[in-house]
Image (cartoon, rainbow, N blue to C red):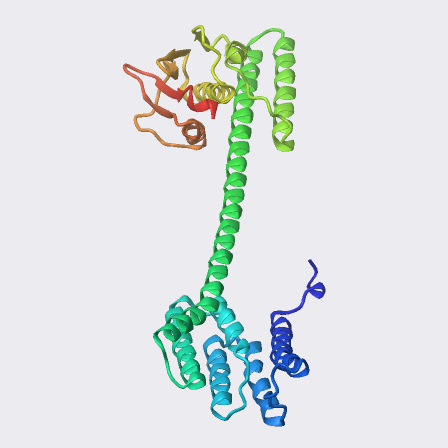
Length: 362
């Protein structure tokens, strides 16, 4: 809503003070006109006291305790001088103050309201009966309790709104991380495959086949990345697409084999995660290991999907977590799984992922 379409807080407070003044003046005048009460004072002092009791309502937001104190003292003073002003300004002011003041002042406000109400009752009735104490205390605490209850409702609504905003931000961050991982995996895999084909084409007498494959891989990579960026690619890759992935990476210098057990159709999220992990692991084999053989083994063990990628290349002695390994680990952890990677005995590199199948159903 545009700022010009709403009243400022200060304007709303002034309007409320005017309405309370109208109520304070109107109710006694109504009784007087109806002939119910002929004792209503109609002189200038009563009018001045009524205005003085209602005016602090406009300041309850900025100076809550000071405003209610002034209003209460003026109302009590009107009783003492015989020009009694209605307690409505104090009751409404107590409600506003309990809504706006700091929580640490609420006990002070409640105690002050009870003391003021008991004093008013004692002055008007000439004494206090036990029943007067109970009813006066109850009436004094009612506006304070009502204001505090609405304040708690407001704070709860604000907290829910903050949680909703935080959840939206978290979802956006996870989506950005997912897209970043997918772009990294797709681009890294296809560029590595292109590199392999280009190296093989240099050694072949006729490089047309290698160039054709490079063209196809480039088009496929661009298509996948475009789909990721535009958010149009909703279907996750399936594990039964792994043989095609392995075929793209196989070349005279690297032989990749894949073994797929008869999988009981794992959930789509699990299959997509497993495919991307294998894709990244094989991409790392091509780029970093100088391996001649690599193998992919996918099987279900108990309630977990276990993926193992091994190679016979030259692996590092220590594990340095780059974007690829971090992306694999984050993918698995989103499904409640895990990824470990490290040197393989006697040589090579091992990546093992464990993905809970049932967790992927959520």
